[in-house]
Image 1 (tube, rainbow, N blue to C red):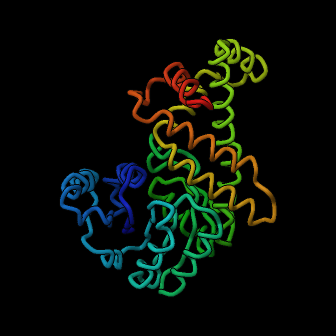
Image 2 (image 1 turned 90 degrees about the vertical axis):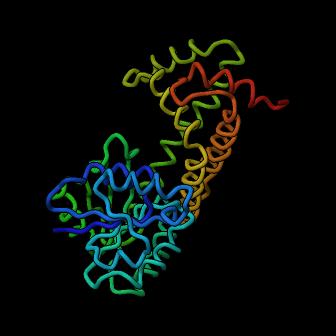
Length: 294
């Protein structure tokens, strides 16, 4: 039986654990700093128990795990690897699934190398819910293929893309330039269209040019992501820009996308909006709040 330990038990870890729960070939555990917070502990522990996950009171509890999945905020990536390294069993595989660039992944790999475990880096290529354990994940590292085989048997969806840490995250970061670049373009174009009174005509025109997508649904999706997860998406785009610059290239589009998404996220806060409002709810607020004289 494979024992999987999560470090960090936020939305992504909860979703993956929920999908894996009940499989006879897997035992699940999780360590999260919030388990020590009396105000948050009961609720978070309850979510873990509901998913068949053993809450760990100390990170040392990962010592019995075969596979460790790190799912924390990007800024904590290296520190978590350093904290986990002394407790990894000799054949354990530490899989870093945090949304950071290849340079940070390399630093995390160096920390894991100080212990007995092996480092594999992963890039989660879609929003985890509603895919849960089947969310597409790219992995790279000396044991990436082994990690994919072990976890795919349990129902996960890992694909090994290389033997060197950083290859998977590079792919994700460069892809982010396209994905979040579209998000930033929609924010700027639709805010301008709203002020001009031509929002629906603009969407009709884009639909004619790119008929393979329903651009109203696309606008609903991306603007809801800006509203709900804008701060995290800015962090990811900052990592994308730094990744591009690490290759000796300039990243003006990525830097501009960071600024646009950050401004839009701030503009939509505390405006009585809901994640389900769609572009028809978001765009008028953006058109008003992003004005240079506001």
